[in-house]
Image 1 (cartoon, helix red, strand yellow):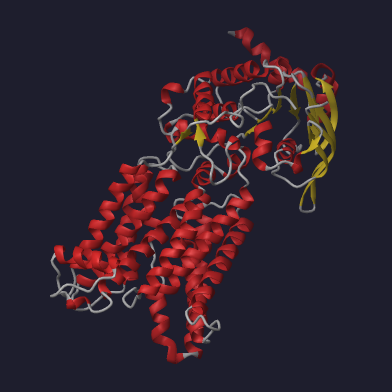
Image 2 (cartoon, chains in turn blue, red; image 1 turned 90 degrees about the vertical axis):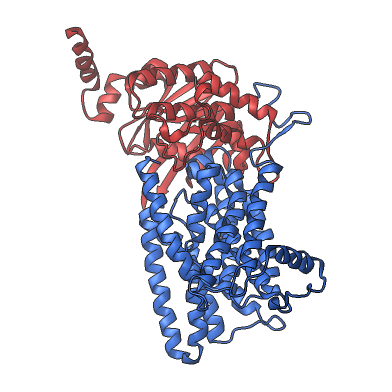
Length: 358
Length: 255
């Protein structure tokens, strides 16, 4: 085996690491925007709270202190804060999943909602609710595990069908199969409603998406899922760059394409499953946010994915704010707001990109 | 020891056997041209060597079965330049070339080093892309894009370079540039090249060895002058190839 040069990268003595991703300052900037949005969203609602009080409440909640006088509207626990936290974590999770799928499949329209994965996850959750599937000692796990399993199963089924139909996994094939799959899921949901009419309200919740009744435990589960699954996805940024250039090219530069594809699919399915089991189907977040973020960061996943975490959190918090305040006191389901805003934004972005030849 | 040895290679796509019992080898310094009509199995052989297709038979790099290599390990020794590049996103030229260094630091906890950057800078300079390093690949012409992927392979620094129709869709200027660059690259000891080509003139001009394929089977393998004979080409292509090429050449006399 020939080695033409003594130093081929691997043998370098203490090589200096070159960063492709963001520096600390950029992270601070993104975090600041998300934090300001969080304070805004906690402050504004059916009962407004001054910003200063909101900050004190958040700091107090984090430190486990008693609420200051005059902030009783938050109850114990501070419900609006918990809700906004869950919204932020869901937005961050869905956005990072969308960014990863768009890179993995080299398809700008790939996302949990367009692929039918979110529909699959909600079907799993609904089956768990309708048939009372639970795990001993873990009352919440039934819905969550079923949502995760169905998300993964749906993704495998959709991608297999797309491969069979069109080996290149083109945008049109995936979207077509995703739409058909979502319609199939919708029919199955109607079938379940027929057999479990007493669960209509709960089932409607999954299809429209809402984080109104979120708890601290939900926020904790979402945080853990984001750290674990999102962490895995973020660490695969270079591999996703290679996939986004082309799967064959990824293989040629040395990426273990089967292993990386499976890892990303499992991480994405698990994360979408957790999000859907807590907040129902919230569409378009994973589709639109990476597109908007890509305009700032470019397509390199080392920058795109971390920025999508903050961008997704900010986007969904603002959607939730709109859902709570636009028709106050009536509240809209957050999934309806994201679909309305997301669909319009997506058309604008896609149209501009196509015109720019991108 | 031979750099690459292929023995009784067969590849099936479902019921269809697209490559049948093909054997050949490549040694250091050689440039093997894989030639044959459309559907002869040329690109399938490239896929099999680069772990992109299941096969029966044996493919060994420096005596070791290529199936036993980790993906990144194989990429450090064998580089493949595909015929089509459809980049979906606006990556910069530098970002695409930098992917060529992935094999030297694979895995989720590895990152680029200064040495990687030096290799990337050299590859960009060699291919004349240094000035457009930050430019989006979506703004490039087909020829420039092919040079970007050639730079990626140079940054990858393999021992064996496999090119699948490297001048496909390229104009004459770029064809000359690409082949000159590869010829220059091959001059370093310890390197060899395999390329799939349709242009028989290029095969005759640059190749040291040739493998002539027809309908998945090897018709002949050996030195270019022994393999690409008028009789064999006529038989494989079903036409008088030499007469056709000379007719084309005579058109230049009119200028």
